[in-house]
Length: 214
Image 1 (cartoon, rainbow, N blue to C red):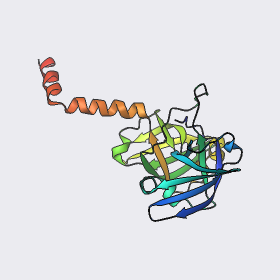
Image 2 (tube, rainbow, N blue to C red; image 1 turned 90 degrees about the vertical axis):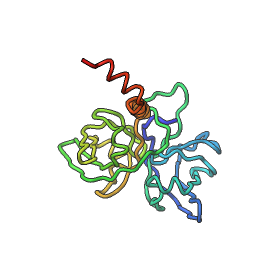
Image 3 (cartoon, rainbow, N blue to C red; image 1 turned 180 degrees about the horizontal axis):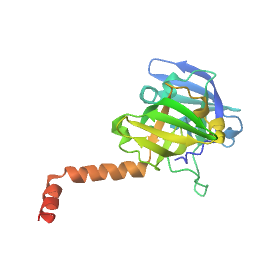
């Protein structure tokens, strides 16, 4: 599990592609302290398993499904990625609880600057946008953020970022057209899906209609 507080922006040292898997080598530097094989690390918000640790370099195997559904499929050597090690019981949770299971990717549509306020507008498939709410939580490339605006008609949402966040995460490097990994808030997802199942239940609809009949 993760908190959405990005610990560092680090460099991808190499990417090796095979027919059914890719191997990433990433420079985690001091973040390898007490890191063991099999441990979980969020890379751009995607939970990956450590397969090798050699000094400050950490390796991960990435399966085809993960490459297809996240922006890790376009990562190249020399790119920078957000990383967060899994949190331990007792650690401060400064963001919100994340699983590292990316639900979708969103495309950056526009960037606007108003003083110190940097506003990024993203387009997200409407099947996932239904889990996004104004002032609700969302994780972009593993960074826990608050939704500052929502336009369901155009399938877009915006986040407002301070310069510090832009400097310490991949979000400051984004260009219009780039994609970010999205993880919607798990509590919101559970609530929406539960309500949808209830409303679609014929017995519940009949009970509701009877209770509200004039």
